[in-house]
Length: 198
Image (cartoon, rainbow, N blue to C red; front, side):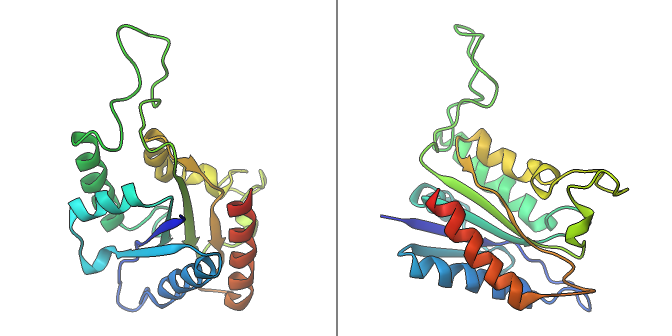
């Protein structure tokens, strides 16, 4: 059985971010995964959610995908609130992890090795105003050679901390100044086929 939870982390801002592209990306992800035989559940954070239901969705899912715009080099604040609420509840119920992995009896155990979600995978999909050329190039002033995955390590770390395998992220670049959405959808299909069959 292949189960996927798709989280739409978009937050509306009048005049700059209506959410149409992120909804289209969520739909494209769902369409591609339907073709691959996945069962799909959705969460649209902006529409509200029940924390316990979200914990259960994470336990049900084999694959979790967050689709998010990039606001000021991060996800919208409502996504951080969602993570704080859902992951803290999953921790307190000892469903996501048993602790940070370390014990006084075995000090060699690594911090971040106490996760219980070891049979799951996580993927981040982003929409950026930044162009693709801004990444993986030490000559670029802002990111100085860093990749998208390095910049968003804070986002994937909470899943990794809980034992989840992290898949390479997907990005739509330059979506405000020079969008190429048709090609983005084609790249997304290829990306999903590659990361989910390896």
